[in-house]
Length: 271
Image 1 (cartoon, rainbow, N blue to C red):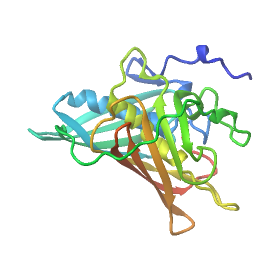
Image 2: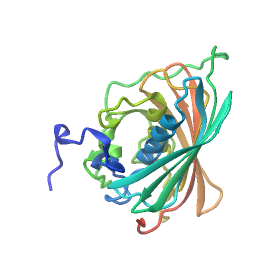
Image 3: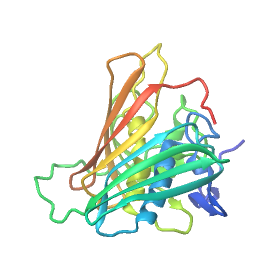
Image 4: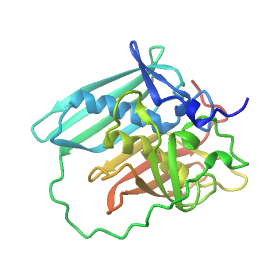
C-alpha cells in the first residue's frame, strides 16, 4: 500500500468522539502498527489532567505515566480526577481505558509557577535547518503515517532515533494533539517526553531491543517555544533492565528531565 501524502494525514493525533477520543494513525508506534506510541499516551492524559485542574497559578512539576499494556489505535475512554487541590499544590490523576479495560494511568504533582528565572543559562546548540526523515531508514519499518516519522519534526545535532547510542535532537509536534484545539506547552512537552527512549536508544548486537514501561517527566518550567531539545542516553548494569535518562532544554536552557524504566521488549505487544 502506498504511503499517504502529508495532505492526506489526519488533522491531529486524536479526534473527540462520544464517550472519549479516537486515536488516529498519527499515534501509531514502531512496535506494532495497531498500537499507540508512548508519546501520544502521555500527551492524551496530560490534556485531561490539565483541563480537570484548570489552574493558571500552578505548573506541573512531576508527571508520571505507567503503560500497563499496549494501547490500541482506536476509540478510547479517558478520565481525570483531582486528588488534592490546595492553595499552592495539587495532585491530579488520569487513566485511559479501552473497552472498559485499564491500559494506562498517570499521576501529576502541581506546584506554584516559577516567577523570576535564576541561575546561569548554559549555551544551547541552534536548531539545524534540515529536517530528519526517520521513515526513510532502510532498517526501520515505521507505520506511515505514524508518530516517529510523521507526527513530530526532528532536527538532529548528534545521534539518531534509528542508530544505537546517545543522541542530541531537537523535536516539536508537527500536528495538534486534539483536533480543533490548541495544544498547550505542557501538552506539547508531555507528548514529546517519551521520545527520549528513541533518541538515546541503545542496541547490543545479539541481544533483544528494550522497551520502556513508564515515563516520568520532571519540569522546572515550561518551554518558551514549541521546540524541545532532548539529550538522551541509556544506562544499564544488567542484560535485562535499563533506564533512559533525558535532559530537556529549550532555546535558553534546561527545562527538566525524563526517566524511563526499560525492559527487554516482548516478542508481541499485548492489547
